[in-house]
Image (tube, rainbow over all chains, first blue to last red; front, side, top):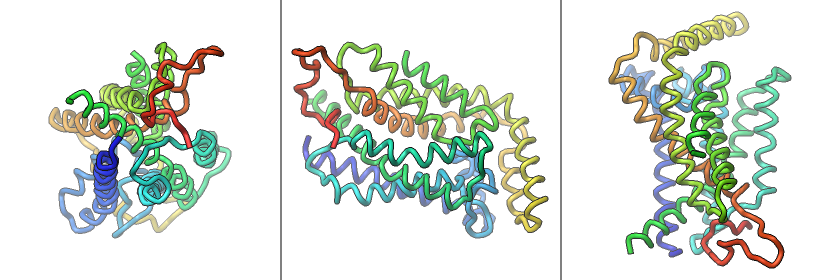
Amino acid sequence: MTRSRILSVYLATLIGTLAWLGAIVLAPYLRSRGIPLARFLYFCFSSVCHQIPGRSFSAFGYPMAVCARCLGIYSGFLAGMGLYPLLRGFSKIQLPKMKIFLAVSLPIVADTAGNLLGLWATTNVLRLATGCLWGSILPFYFLTGLAELASRGKKRIE
Amino acid sequence: MPALVGGAVAGILSGIPLLNCLCCLWIIGGAILASYLAVKDSPVSLKASDGAVVGAFTGIFAAFIRLFLSIPFRAVEFALFRKIMERLSEYVPETPSEWKDIFSLGAGPISMAGLLLGLVLSAAIFAVLGALGGIIGMALFGKKTAPPGQGTKNETSQDAGHRQS
């Protein structure tokens, strides 16, 4: 797998992640200015998030386009994208160890299960934190799969 | 077939009010399930890229199923949101009035154009989330252990797929 292919997958994913996170913050800003595009942005994110205001952080006087946990996952994803070049570089791709995945998944699973079962109710800050921790490992999977897929596609064309 | 099953599970669970509070996690979970089923049915080891493909299809199927479910559940969901809002205002007297506007965003009758736009957007977003879930699923279940003395059929491949660090 060439370095340039991994790098292009990385850059495309980074741009997509920044655009995604930008749109989450842009939605309440546009809504506060009365710009109709806000409606479209909230609609886009409604397919992936319940958007309950009480479970979301606010910006510009309006709830963000996704809930605190989702915001944590996407922010964590961006943080993971930042860590990726430092931990992996672009010369090879490797999946993370399963025990690391299980360790970072445990807090979000426990917190979500506890909330769903009515055992406890966590604050939005904790939801953000557990989401962020889990999200930070996701790019290491996503980039591996996509880079491998891009490599397969290239081989087929050749 | 694994993508259909995973997509059905993810689509149903993400479309039911209350259960949909797990947001995108259902799609990722459905794709992990699809990967598991694909690995079970496959005689050879599958790689991360196979998981991405299975997961992407799972996400697309989930978008279709969620759309069909959302039509009857739409009214229920808004009634539920309104109730949550009322409860919230009991405990937090200073709930910003602007929050209530958010509920009006999706209220009202659904147009055909709105449905199609929703489907296309959901399918695109779910495909990406599904691909992520599929890759995680392959990392968790993709490696087949061969009987002693025999390697797995893909063991010689040095493509990232299954080396974990």
